Image (tube, rainbow, N blue to C red; front, side, top):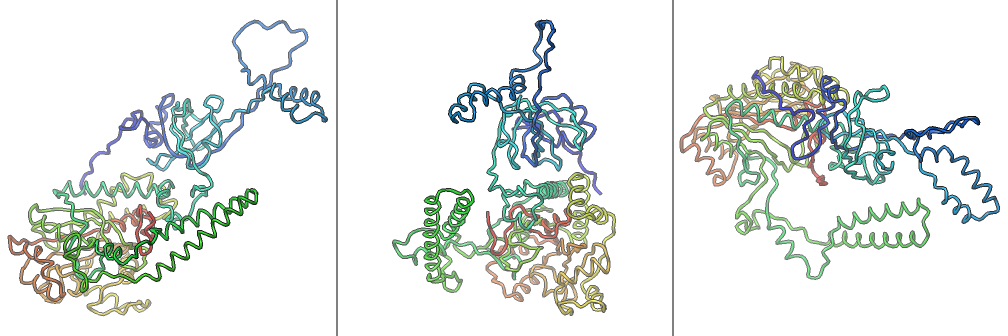
Length: 619
């Protein structure tokens, strides 16, 4: 295992560069530094996770003795406000006597205005988190010193930027340090009735509807920090091993696998739709009208609850009815429109933006090969797209992938690199995300840390596809949904059985039938199998897929014909075999599956900041 570079940390008292505040992680993590910060003044910022208000008791003046001597002049220990507060019962008695039951409210109001009764000050206790760590800092605000109201700062989600002094808590509790506020620099208020995180521990599937707000939850924040660490670990591993980072295109004219569902990129549909649209039709979006209906319905409900006047409620109901009628008209218009499909056999793609059919990339490794054939070892990291309508907890339409290509390397080299890289990611997560790993172990999966440690220490089983089929055929106590025979792809159910029940550890399966792997994979000497492999781990399944790629020109041409692919589309790829061909191999890691493994999550939609799946792209 490679020795890791030391962590980059800043001084606990050093404000963040480009922001005049101290990151809470530098205050809260590391018990050896906390006590040294007592008495230090600093600026912190974050969002309120929870809060409470404690009213301060009024200070009553002791009764003076009849024979007491006049008080000598000296420092004042009691404020004017506290003296007035102590006399409140006396003042109220005078008001009742003078006002009497027969007095008008105006008279009583006049008398009360002559004797102002100040509001009792409060102490606010806020748990503030700035997203840098799991823990929150207790922030204490005395409204007698810092004039703020409960409605301003207590609601969950309120943003606070404050200056204060770090102190030991006055009361015993779970907090070992707190910030006593001297000045509030910024308050970002919250609309409490609309803020989605007022309830504690919303289910993860409910949070998906608020992907712009959900990172403020402790769970999603921890997952995001672990994801960030895995990204940094990826860059560290490959940079330390002599790889060059290459950005491959997201828009491509090449189908990287030859049989995948793709998203087509075109401007022809928009032009055709505009031609079909009758002149004079209002440019009103049905989605906009539906959103308006939702807002107007909410307004009507509020008016009903608030006991508002009947005229306002009647007007709101009329407005809602008209908006519903408009939505019905738009829906009818949408249904009556002709369906306009862009098909290759009826559309001239020479008029399209790129002058030919283009797609969002399924994989960037074909483009990566061209750089491997010039630079040696290269890697890329980015989003990949599949227009697959299948709903699965392990796949969405946009997923991030790490892709690697190595010149002068064979299948064994690729499998060794994949195993080393995978173990490096597991070790990096445990070493650099200790607090987040404690949280996900407690909240999501109690075995996740043990699982990662086992991935690092265990030796990985290596078996051929043929051996895997033989093992699965001998299973008698389990019936698989897909009937297994040689030449059929191994399903997630097959892989799960092999990793979770049979071997009970990670394994690498290699030499797959040529019909189940892409055209570019190198054909083995038997003429039936290709030099491809898959790394399978317990609970997650397939994490890495790789292969040695076909460097022989005649073999590649034959494979392209077998897959019935357009030769023109791959002419540039074939060129790599004509001009300085080289043996090369590589692999792809499903980055989002890696996040599932390290966090204990079970649905990839909870591991991706903004998930895109069939019928779902909210933001």
